[in-house]
Structures are given as C-alpha cells and as structure tokens.
Amino acid sequence: MAEFDVDAVLEDINTRLAARYIEAFRDYLVAVVLKNKPQTRAARTRLEEVVTESMGKAEILGALSTLRRASSILAANLTTDRRRLITFAETSTTKILSSVTFEQSVKDLVDRVPVTLRNAAERTAGRIAQLYGEGHVVAFAKSAEAEVTKRAQELITKAAREGIPEREVGRSLKFGVDRVRKETAAWTEGYARMAFRTNLNTAVTAGRFRQANDPDIKAVTPAFRFTAVGDSDTRSNHGAADGIILAVDDTEWRRLAPPLGYNCRCEVDELTSADLRRMGRVDKAGKVIPSRIPPGAGPDEGFRHGGRPDIALGGAS
Image 1 (spheres, rainbow, N blue to C red):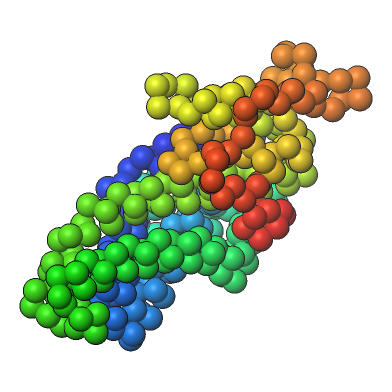
Image 2 (image 1 turned 45 degrees about the vertical axis):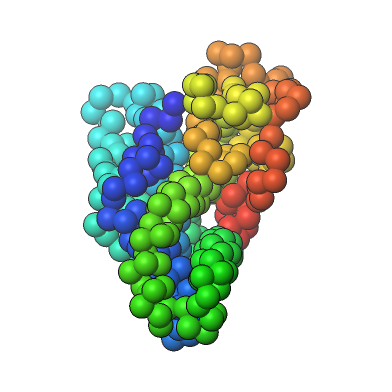
C-alpha cells in the first residue's frame, strides 16, 4: 500500500466537502424538477464548482502521496544529520478536503515538501492550478448533470401519471419541493456517494501519475504497481490487474489506471529502483521489465474509462 494513505479521501463521506457534494446534487435535482430556470442555472454552477474543487484537492493529495514516498526513499539514503533536509511535513487529508480552499491546497503541496523535491512539487502544483483553473473537469460535472436530469424526468413523468400537468410540477402542493426532496433523498445520496468516490479516485490517481512523471521523481520511483483490495467485493477484472508492475510512463496505464469502474477502490503504489532490482524487474539497460497483462484485466464493461487520468484531465505534465 502507498505510504500516504488516501483512504480518507475515498471513504470519508462525512467530510464537509462530501456533504456539500451531496447537497449540490440535491439542489440541482430539485431545480430541474421545478423547471425553475434561474434556480437550475445557479444549481448547475454550484455543482460544477464543488466537483471541480473536490477533484482538484484530491489530485493535490495524490501528488502529495507520491512526493512523500520519494521523500522517504531519499531520506533512507542520508546520514541522520542530513535527513532534516528531506523531512516531509505532516499533512491531514481531512484538513485539505474540508478546511482550506483549493488555492491553499495548491500552496500546501509546495510548502510541505522538503527543499530537495521543491522544484518537482512546484512544477506539478503549477500544472494542477492551471488545469483546474481552466475548468478541465467540467466534463465530470456534465456527466453527473445528465444522470440527475434523467432522475428528475422520472419524477416529472410520475407526477404526470398522478394527473399533475408537467408545467404545474413543483407548483402543486401535491408535488412540491418537500415531496421532491423526500422522494429523491435515498437516490441522491447514493448517487452522490458513488460519484464522489469515483471522481476523487480518478483525481487522486491523476495526481500520482502527474507527479511521478516529473523527471526528478521518476528517477526515484520509476514504476507503479496496481493494487486491488482483494476482498469479496473486488470485481474479477480488477483482481486480475492486481500486482501488475509497469513504468510510470508505460502506455498500458492508459487502459489500466484506476478507477476501473464506479466505486473502484483500486490504487497504484510507487516502486523504487531498489524495489525493482530486488524483484528482478530491471533489465540490463536499466529499464523496468513490465508485467504481462493477464486476460480479463481492464475496466468494467460500460464504464467510461478515460485512460490515464492525468492525461484525460488535461495532459501530462
């Protein structure tokens, strides 16, 4: 497992940011059902903002994960009196998700990194700030909007079956805001949880790949290993990919990088040159010997896998 545990990003739906995620989905659904155009526009903008913010912060956490791993490897090769030069400041995933702005989290990425890795961190932080500032993740919000709109139309159709004209939905006491919220509460929370986890896993993985492909970091951790959870809930195609080792820039990651499906819990873990030599995974030219891809390893059928997520979110660094 990666030394920097990002499970809190994917599991803790109780963070303030996750709560805002659910609220944004709920408000958008209600606005669409009510056919209130100004309210729908405002809710759509808010939904896009919270998706962008959450994914931006998650990508920062992914980059921090890779930087922390590189820092620990470099520190192990230094004398005790010089390890302070490579000390990585502690950070809190919950704090980054809930208590700081995206701009502050970008600054945090650089400030917490030891001076020997500062240039690599600055390059990645700058790229992340640029991409998310330009709205490169709006497509993820658009996908969510489409699903919420579909659910809203189902409610409108239901109201029509009850004899309420479509133009009156939301105005009628029989089908007002309170009823819409009540009838959609379970679906909204369930869908928002799924979207939150899937989108954030995409962004965490993007941050890891974006940072790992920086030349300074690639020299320290040149490969990733695919890691599936391996419990009873692990899908067979995800399990088939478990243990695959590839160079961080191997093109096979474009079809194997997590997430491989909705609610995917798989990750990639950094491997050092020493790790690879110990495993016999370095050839005479010093290149990573890639794993053979097992049959069946790959994304879920029907899942819109975007490839290596750092590239899908606006190009590699």
